[in-house]
Image (spheres, rainbow, N blue to C red):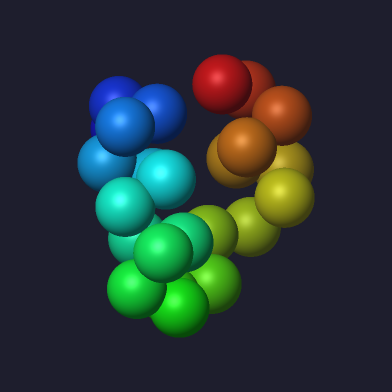
Length: 25
């Protein structure tokens, strides 16, 4: 997943992505 897409999801208030996955980014 692109970081831009992730940031957009965060703006939408979606927090379903595990922190472990974010660490891989």
